[in-house]
Image 1 (cartoon, helix red, strand yellow):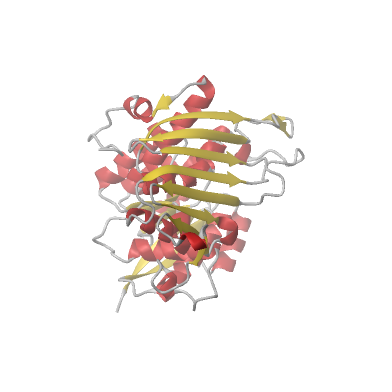
Image 2 (image 1 turned 90 degrees about the horizontal axis):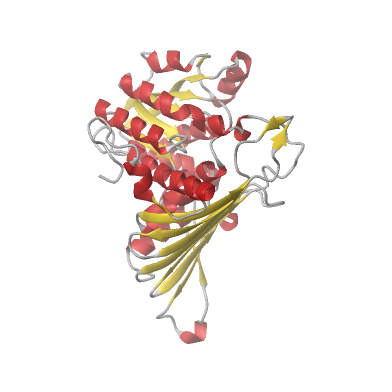
Length: 383
């Protein structure tokens, strides 16, 4: 009989709900060596966290995240709080010997991310960052096809993420508009795209970015984050990339696209049709010139066999269930991926973009990583 992995979730909002869902569904997808059980949830407001925990089926709550980490009935700490809190919580969890899953981004900056990486590495605990979109069947299929050479040598990579989250000037000020708590739009949204860029196209060598804040105050409080940003990327492989993230795109709720062009083909993913992937190859019959739709629901496609029959598709929630299943499938021996090493590598690119946007010049990723070396133990994302 499988053992139990006891999970404590810090945070009870949208991500706390999504992660709770993932823990419940993952054991239904595939056999796991342990069954995840959420034993406790923390939040600053006692009434709100109690109501959320009751809805999610979590038996206990606390209002101090440090108390959650210290509990004997917590083997794994899941951090679902604003980005400005992530790195400290992750370090504390590692110090307590607990496995750590941290929502993205890993930290507000590369220095914090590298410190969190050093903490989990030094403690020898499992660690992962919640880049959940890579676990959608169509995105995973896109990554697999690139790796298998379906488009030849990757030459161009591009992605956009458009949201209307910040378009209304009447939206009151909260942590999302405070850089010290929520991080930039580059880091908060862009980190997902950078994760996909690194996993599909390889390391980024340098970047040139721009960013703007259109609504500069809310509730009478200055806004310290960008509303929109875009960047050019140069990959170490020689490939080129472009990326745009914005929370100022009216009637674009959560729209992101990823495209890869290679020497022998093109792949396109559009989140609005998240069960589909578009592909065109240079060797295709010219009478069928153009792109063709792949429905990423066949049992031969990543994750699809564990879900529903062809034609039914999956949704946003599936990415969180797939995430849990992937992490726990090899417990306790297999390392987790993407881990803090990948999370710190993503953060280095975010930092380079932010530096570039402020300075108006190209910035090498090595400028960011070299500025904070060496850490104790010489633990580096690129090492």
